[in-house]
Length: 129
Image 1: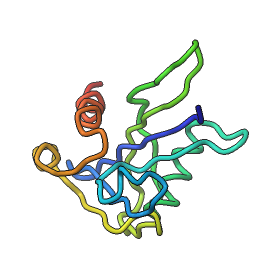
Image 2: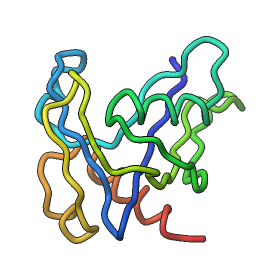
Image 3: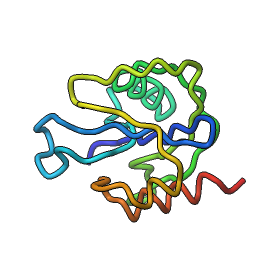
């Protein structure tokens, strides 16, 4: 299993989601998702998070906190971070077709979101101190 990161980007009370268009995961085409991806060789989870956000959205971010660590066999396999953008000029990568900033209430009604129930749980966790 490849190690991965997901990044919840929050700005002015809204969350950034990007719409997948590439065919890497056919079941996710047209779905909204948060930025994220796989770690490269020797890369830390934090560095991967910052890189993936830049690649997928053109945003520079500050990581605010770790929202969740997912472990298997006592080894971290994935981390979810809450991040704040340093700029707001979103330009989606060729993997994505669109982006949007959504309030929590809007997210509850937005379809389709990849792993929506889990994503909303992560949003809830990100709001706790």
